[in-house]
Image (cartoon, rainbow, N blue to C red; front, side):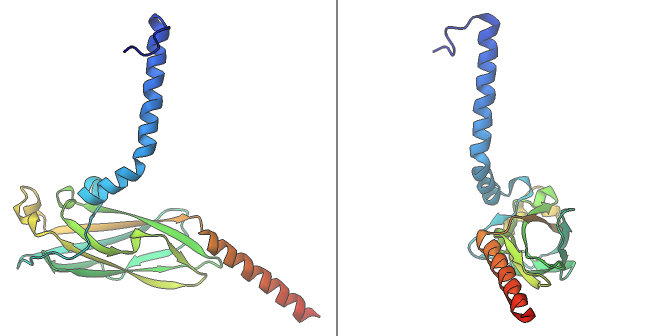
Length: 203
């Protein structure tokens, strides 16, 4: 079956090309949730794998985990790892914390992106629980410790390249995001309360 049968020559070619562009754009838009899921399941693109439980085997071999923290240039938080490095046995559950602080006078919501290096370790670093799975909201002056539970899959020692990995770097970058509706409402209610209270105090 031919596309655009009523068009001839260059006109048909141009129409077909435009149709392909529209189709690919539609697929790209629809594939965003799928791509995110695919990365979590496979570790593709530096995304750590996600598991519901810890590894069933713990090896005697240890590996060093480095923790890195950065902020988008528009993100007003302070954000640092509690420790910079941690040695864990392969397959052993590790628990690390990142500290976040909102120094502003307003609630700020943030979402974290994350990455694993080197490439050979990307399919073997597995998260069990992580603050990065959902949006974080810090109130003015609030400081929190955010946990991430993880392990290194023992199968890394059988990988042609992974077996030579001795250090894995887990990197997070926080971006400011829009506040949830309830946070906006709470902030508005508080502002109205403060205004009403000031009016009462002046009478």
